[in-house]
Image (cartoon, rainbow, N blue to C red; front, side):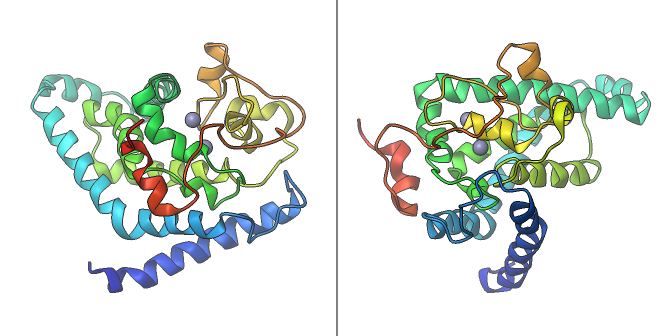
Length: 255
Ligand SMILES: [Zn+2]
Ligand SMILES: [Zn+2]
């Protein structure tokens, strides 16, 4: 598909996200005074457009190569044994394993300076909403998407089986960034909630809430944080360019 051919579908996706998340942000705002066109709106919009129009191809290409690379290593009788289980058991195995891997992979992004160079772009957002979810360096996306799919690739799930789950997980990742605070009480410990991820973006952060679906791993490994109010500020302390290209270049700057 050429770039001009992609524009209508990107426009539709954008509209879909606004229609889905904007009413929630209006009805249950985490910060009632935050406007739709808040500061850095255009930077984050460029991240969204870049993701859809330029980088999704790179991510997909890297993912396919990674999958092909793994195919050479995993014994086929292992995959036959996995496939012989009931579908729900396979689904549970895949979700728990990928939650476990992404939890530790995310902790590493905060711990290893080389990974933080890329991941800090995502954390530089000072206003969180459905759009800020897209502020992510494309190589950071390759890292996350590759690792989150690792169990599915090893266990040998066909891409078609995964598609529905991947779409849901993608939307959930946008939801937890949205400017929303829903009164769901202790249910958030089971299914997760935006306020947990908002605390992950706390500017004065110590650590916490690394999971992006259920917070089970955070509870298990002692990094679950859920104060009853929103953080004072989001963002990072280190200096970082405010514009799209500057942020893309940020990990490669000499320091
Ligand atoms: Zn993070
Ligand atoms: Zn985030």
